[in-house]
Each structure stands twice: as structure tokens, then as C-alpha cells.
Image 1 (spheres, rainbow over the protein chains, first blue to last red):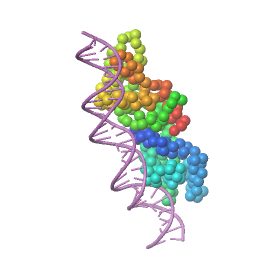
Image 2: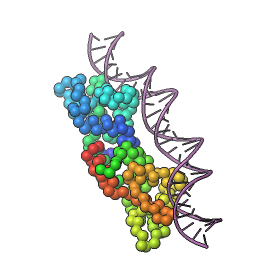
Image 3: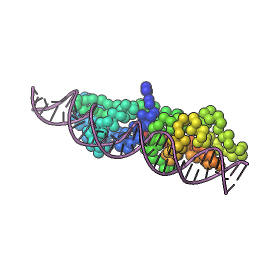
Image 4: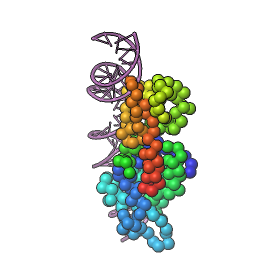
Length: 107
Length: 107
DNA sequence: TTGACATATCGAAAAAAATCGATATATAAT
DNA sequence: ATTATATATCGATTTTTTTCGATATGTCAA
């Protein structure tokens, strides 16, 4: 994975709400029952959850959650797909896997 | 699991100097040639480096480095051994190993 | 006991991050 | 075109973190 900045990753993980979001997104269907309600069947955004649903669960303001997600994406932890007026965020599993490897060998 | 607070750990890792210290301490004899100079042979503080040596390499004030080390110890990353007027810090490898495991399974 | 040295802690100032409401932008629906 | 909805960004304030110098504590050596 290109461009990993460990400091940015650790900063993104240094907040309870952000850490929760990352963990909720491991099992989106469990934590976000309404997941994908807006999506027609032919569009597949596997594991992605829209900002509004995340905000509701996170119990923070819309702008705060939007900024959290942006921060986590910049760090590499998340990736986003836009579909219509919604932005779906999901974990970047490939990155997170490499991160675990980095952690094991470099930390 | 030994009393791990992920947020505190990630905060401790969210700083370049602290991250450097942790990595320097993987190979103390390489990064701190004077390591253990004060110790009589019969005392073994394997892998530990005293605050002054770390401070010199980290290029920050004495109080800052002392606080860094304290913070990393509270987070679980380091452990300290006091010998006379010196405090030797070394990595808590057991904790760090568990941390890597946590990372792999929980993040 | 005194002086020197290593480290820890305190208190304050400066820098950075968190957080929000307001507003902008983009898309969708009518 | 107009309106509604979802998300992003801006600007400002509050909160937290960083960082230091000063000082306290603890240990050693003479």
C-alpha cells in the first residue's frame, strides 16, 4: 500500500468514536441494519455505510462525523464510494492488513 | 490481556519522537553505544537505556523526554528499572506482542 | 552533611486538535 | 427551475496536547 504515514494512522485511532466506527464497519449489517437501503440491487457497495447512518450511531454532529471519516480515509483506514447523493464508507481491508503487518514488524 | 487502553497506546504512538524512541529501543546497542556505561557487570538491565542517553538522541528537553517515557510506560509500551540514580527504560515486549495480536484481531 | 548529578514533577504559555453551527456543493425528485 | 436531501467545507470557539524552564526528589560521593 502506497503512502502509509504511521503517525496519521495512530492519530486517527486515538479517538474512541473513530475507533468505534472502524469496528462497527467490520460488521456493517450487524451495526447498521438499514445499510444500503438507498441502493438498487445492481449496485454493489459491499460493506459500505453512508455518512448519515454512521452519524446517527456515533451520536456526534454531522460535520464532526464527516470530518472523522475524511480523516480516517486520508490515513488510509477507510475508502469511500459515492453513489448519488450518498457517500458510502467502508474499511480498506488491504491497508489494514498491511498495517497489522507493519505493526508486527516495525513497532 | 494486561490492562490495555488502546486509545492511550495510540496516543503514545502519535508522535514522531516517541515512535522513534520505541524503535531505537529495539536495538539499544546500535542506537545507544554508551548503553549501560554506569552499570557494574553484575547488574543486568537487558535492553534498558537511561533517560539521559535517550534525551540526548531525541533532542528534546529533559522534562519533555521524561514525560514521554512516563506516558509510554503508563500506556504499557515501556517498562522501567531504577538503578541508583538512573532510570533505565526498555520495551515491554510482552505487551507489544499482545498489542500486535490485538491489532490483528480487533482493528 | 554537603554538593553534584539524574530524573520526576509542577505550572504556565504556545500550538494543535476537536467540535460545532452555518453555509456551500452536489445530486435527486417534482 | 425549484425544492429537498446528503455530504463537505468554513470559521470560530473550546479543549487538549505539547513543550519548556523552574523546582523538587532521590541517590551517590567526598
